[in-house]
Image (cartoon, rainbow, N blue to C red; front, side, top):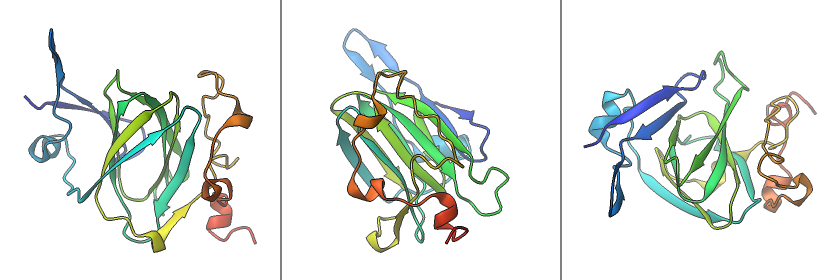
Length: 190
């Protein structure tokens, strides 16, 4: 049954994946990952860790990455919805510093594959939103890093107004409040 449709985003290797979904009077069924089927659409990677998080409406997490043991991620929403964002941090990439964002939701069932070398973050658009994602490497807290969600040089267009979220009421962790800009992180600003 597994059949996955891959859509390019304009940033090399960052792709949206639409799974085949069987819907009938009982509900629905879909495969969310198949190594064989992913290889058919050009994603040949091994996932070693699965994560699951729940967030209230208005929670913004990110932008996170690991400096060593970089993680590729396959992200999907199983309840609620998010505005998901990936920022290309691959040195030498023609799209270095560019971002891509989209809504992932329980209803649209879209997934995004974020390769190694990207920062990742999301804004929860509904209460009790649940995200599940597969990672290509393990989490190492000693290599955990991040950049500011509102870095003016990256200029992510977070959809606060579109989803009736007051920017001043967005909920962050202490860590995410104090992340450096990309230039600060790279040591370009002292």
